[in-house]
Amino acid sequence: MPRRPAFLALAPALALALALGAPMPGFATPPPTDPPDPSGASGPSGPAAPRPLRVVLIGASIARGWQLDGFAARIGRSDVVVEYVGEYGFDKSKSVAALLARGAAERPDLVILKECGAYFPGDQAAYEAMIRRWVAELRAAGIRPAVATVAPVAAPAGVIQHLKAFVKSWILGREDQNAAIARYNDSIRAYAAAESLPLLEIERALLHPFGGLYALSPMLDSGDGLHLNPKAYAVLDQELDRLLDP
Image: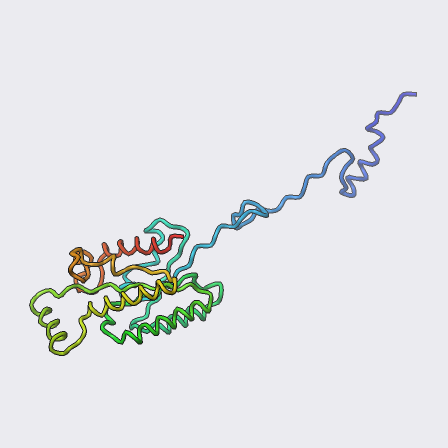
């Protein structure tokens, strides 16, 4: 009697396995595959793309003209997103409170406290107390605070401006605007060093090229003696880029 081929003896088992969806004898079952990750991760255990550093700069008209929402594109960075929050007047308490009221997912990682030369001369003791309070509030919320020096204003130009400056300083006894700004900047630098705070060095980046003259560089002045032109903002882009370097 002729022998049956061996594979015919396995036929009933193969048919039953196919019916039940079980692995067939002699065949390995391939491991299950995960569906593709819509986030773009390399696999089930692949690292997700790092979240960009979220930065908020609180300021007024100079910061508004900076157009910080385009900073990352101008400087060629994809690891940072910068937001401008505007509040006019030295007191930025409302803006700080609004940031702290954001949900955890919307809070920034870094907040830069920037002031404008228009607020000087002023009550420097009160100014410094506000800065210290905002820094403490941000730190308590787990947000890293940073401070900025203030841009000087342009030197008086023409007879009328020189006369006004003379009357304010020598007749009315008021502190010179740039002298008050310089005094505040010296204080804010010392405070930043003592508290290990990041410092956005605006003053030195925009100073007049003649070392003996403390004033806004005429090459960076928009024309009103206080606000900045596009070249000045390009300089500030470089300063902010240095501040944000790891």
